[in-house]
Image (cartoon, rainbow, N blue to C red):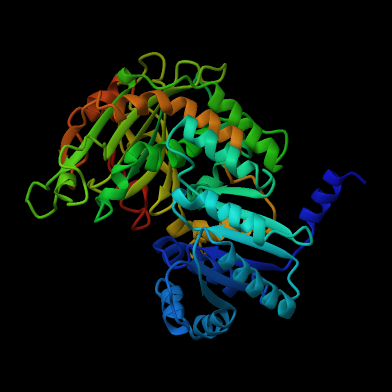
Length: 508
């Protein structure tokens, strides 16, 4: 048996893990990583003997660590509280530097001690860390905590570089230490329920699959809106901006799933092959196809502007809003604009995909609005199809109606897992499908790096907009330039629909 085949078979086996959370004292670990691990443990997706070791530079005693771990864990029932007590017994903490072999050796001693007690045969290293320490930590782990006797998996959080060159440098350094099969570049949007549902919607339904192309679709909008501003993170955010923070990763991942061709199978590499192919058909974004904004004070003066943050340079041109149009130059999508819009300090919290179809040919009926498929990613997960219908009564007046699948009503008894729970479980199962491959990352940065260089050089001025508004002036015209058409008649959601339906809250 070849070594590659042996490694593959080793990865396919069920393993008991020791989980090491690096950066355990930080916000990401507190808000996402530990709650996700607890969720998996509580629902018995994590082996009940799995030990979790937190590692960070901050010194914490046992009680402080337990309080930190528990801060964002929601305990709704007595069963939750009982599971939480058991979970904490499996957690331990060790402080240490990120560039000291002696500290990583002490970590190794701690790992071996719990492995002796649990019988664990695999190690999962979760790097909940800033990118500035990725490589020093990876070197420390490889030198002191990597063993050929155990299966090793490494989760790396975004951002994966700042541009094409830095991404390639990071990939090269990380690739010299761990194999691509061992690395899981996590983008938590790929773990969201409706994003995971995209392939089912597209490839398991003839009614969607047959119209998913340039012949029937006029334009596609992917929207990511946040109500919060930078909220004290301005100094950190200013290094990256909204495009690196949201568009180049989260939104582009959604675009690939909307636009990719059917994969040969559901195998991780077959899925990721098709995502890479789509990205390679997208030319770099040009200045005429982008609009930037930066939020100021709210109109009532209660909410501060971006430049009011003391950690943000007063002359900063960093965008907090961006609208960009991408074109996929292949047979399926040629000529169809994909408009991505994202921003902070906006009027609502929403992530959705809006697929708008072409106008009906001919003039049999007047005042027709276009059909749309809307996939609401968050909040209030839903899929709904906007269509024309006859208004009840005498006559043939047309109205806009909907075929609505709102999860809150259709799946009211189902619990939708958190994205991080879903993705960590994928790692434990050795499934790379929902993680970013190195060549995929390279193709993504090629699309954005030229325009990012212009933005970084101050060549594109952001348009100011008020905190809690819908965004900078000109966004409506920008979207209309690429063919998006609003309803030509009033749109009213029927009264008999379930309260809280996503379609009833439809806002552009």
